[in-house]
Length: 277
Image 1 (cartoon, rainbow, N blue to C red):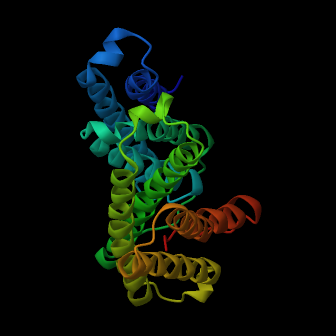
Image 2 (cartoon, one colour):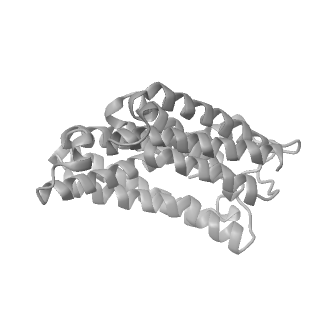
């Protein structure tokens, strides 16, 4: 096994170990070490993040430039989402996000390590372009975590409506606190998405010549969906199912904007491009 592949495998194993901590507490069963000692799971998550970053750095940064291929970008978003999950882990009420985010991050780096190709998409970029990409990546990651939070919220609300308040629901924060956290994620992601679109329009030249028109339209659509959602929350107090539907609709549009278009162009049509929204 290649050294970098071993690093990715070890990162996945540590991510899974970190996810077992909140999962054990959520189910109220499992090894005592994982169920009762949060520090152990936190340490595993931190080590996994570091290994993920090391492996991904070797994949992206080469002598000739940056490889922003499909699987590398998937792993980079996975790393950022896992970092957000780690930050949420520090607040026990929302540590359950790690049950999903950590394994997904581990799978993403393993896919990048085993399926990535030498696709050089960016060389000699300027700092404004790197700023645009950074804003885009963080916005995508925040809104991705918000979408996951919306799914959990939908399950929680559905079970409460049916009178099933026990079981796993008793381990989740109150509905109002879950919604508040959801809109914090959306607001932060929306601000960064706005900055990403603004910097993209200024610093990305020859937009239509780079096969970016579909991505741009879908990104603007996602921005509009989240703008309406935040306005509806402020003006009419939108919550519950309405907030969940708008959140998931916005994220689906954003996912299609980047990974959907990138999948078709790179892996199906064999045409390469690397910029985020």
